[in-house]
Image (tube, rainbow, N blue to C red; front, top):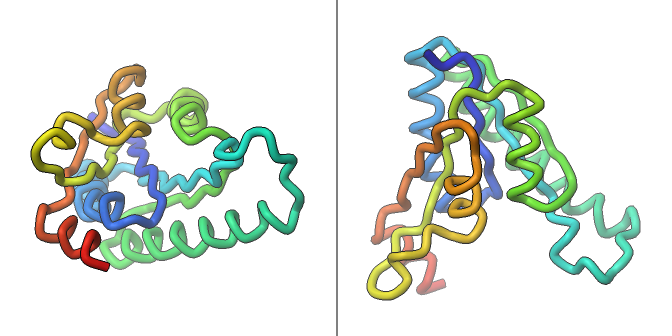
Length: 150
């Protein structure tokens, strides 16, 4: 059913909540797990990025991706780590199309009250516009509260 699973990650606790689910899914189906970190070079779109700015973003991405690929390998799951530059949700959608991804697994923040209607702008846009199923994994509320206290 699923041969290629995409796990976009930014290294946040919310994204990390999706890792176990993505690895389990890949293990169950014998699928390849694609771990994607997008170095968002559009956040300050009026600024021209020099290598000295992009390199730290990519280095952070490599660290995050390598950790997830290692976790997958410990379970015997074939994983591919990729760091790309660009706008986050567009890069995710392009990766889905270019790599014949069957399902996307993404983390969301556990929210209460008014915020609970929002998945997070990137996750929401991917859910609304992806041509493949998107599994969202909510970060547990107690993890989210711990993050807010820091």
